[in-house]
Length: 120
Length: 116
Image (cartoon, rainbow over all chains, first blue to last red; front, side, top):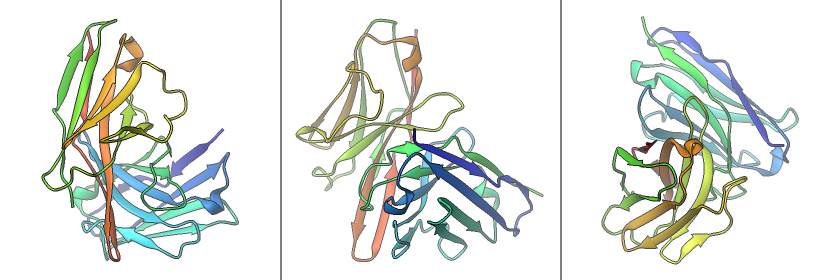
């Protein structure tokens, strides 16, 4: 069955960096676009970024543009999110979600998330 | 880009029906919207996509027949019939928006459904 397992979360000081990973299994990773979506404590969902199946196209929310970088390794079925210049408002649970070939397809499967806390 | 508005809370008795609403901002009445269910402490789960003509494509894995959708004007509805305890969740609506080289997903604030 489809599985997405996030890791790499933790506590980091403002201005610091963190790298999240998302290990995928149960589907053809190399033909799927993947999203990162986050959720601040007690709040709704906020889309963060997307990477096309071949990494040719990447899109970012304005709130993270220039600070976060999405990448993938199709040989290892793994997605990454490099987060730099972290701010308190980046705190939340980060989910990876499987999309389709096109950006506009639904986020069909989600992981359980990894918690990022930005605090001094 | 569209703004999606959801009431923060809803409630229904066990076995009853409830309709959740997601309202698109003006000018986006042709947009399709996805519904996602999020149980406490879990990642979201895709329910189904809805446009003005009703469901678009297939339901998500394991979504029971009790769940249905409708679309009218700026509103996208998710109806749950014969509500069960396991339906108590947060329900989020989301939509993609893109033009040129700029593509984003937007989500509503979510509706917390309480089963009485």
